[in-house]
Length: 62
Image (cartoon, rainbow, N blue to C red; front, side):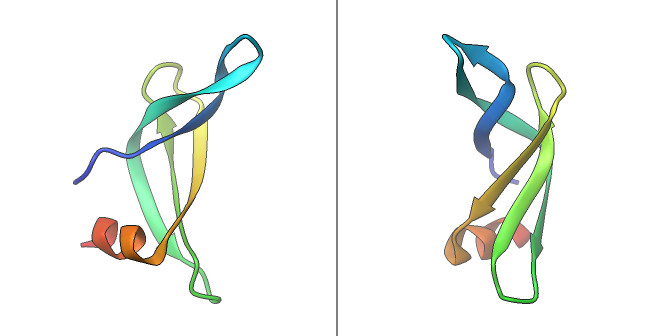
């Protein structure tokens, strides 16, 4: 599976969220056809969420 990076709201520097690697991402598609990923931050263990494009979502689901 590909490495997925997203903004972590808990890992902040200068009061701005930082990009972290998402552990165990679960990619889903909602009823409107929009892809999203949920997982945990590799640095702090906090919950992460990211909307994805259709091409990226389909590639991650394979």
